[in-house]
Length: 274
Image 1 (cartoon, rainbow, N blue to C red):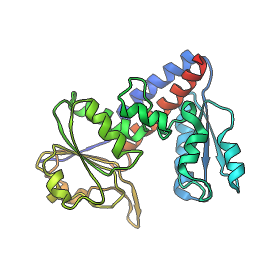
Image 2 (cartoon, rainbow, N blue to C red):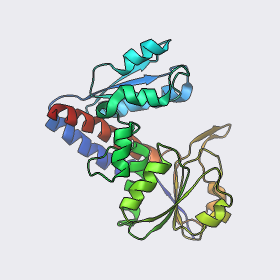
Image 3 (cartoon, helix red, strand yellow):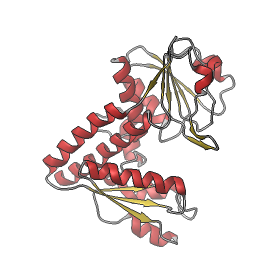
């Protein structure tokens, strides 16, 4: 069996075209502040890519370094604008929950505020989910069409990918198994699925023995190694057994960025209405 390597550029381009149209209809450039630790090479590189992608669709993305103390960061998080992002790693002197609370549901584009997370839980039509979780759903719908009745294993139960993704798949009537660090026999669950989505950040976790022949693998993990970027899927091991594997980082990554831009313009549209 030949294994297809999926890249998300074409799907991302279509999403971004929709974002451009919505920005044009809004009549102004949405503005998003992007807080980051510039000394972190990964965060700095990601911020640079986000700024370029945002500018391409007419969104103003403004990067800023985290301030040196908690009170100053609290002030930053409440700055004026349509949207606010706080890139990891966040400073140790302020908690993730406080960051989400200070950003507020209206400007939250990461889907981490309790009201936005609750909207995903309840299956609300206008919910604003985390971008990576939405990207995974859109990729699967691109590949498979309806997800009704599909057997899908989600590996990883984080608040930004695994948990919201499982809920969104359930809304589409998929049968979902969620595995995590305490799952005793991971392969016994993933082998039963026709789709495996892995978002753990554990390099090479998913191997040939974890999957059934012909399965589709969405690799959300990105790990920096001496050999470069790798994902959760051991590509060499699953080649010839999986029907499709998403490229790392150009599979889920471009679609995630496009979905994040969607969330930013959604925040700007909501602000224009209020």
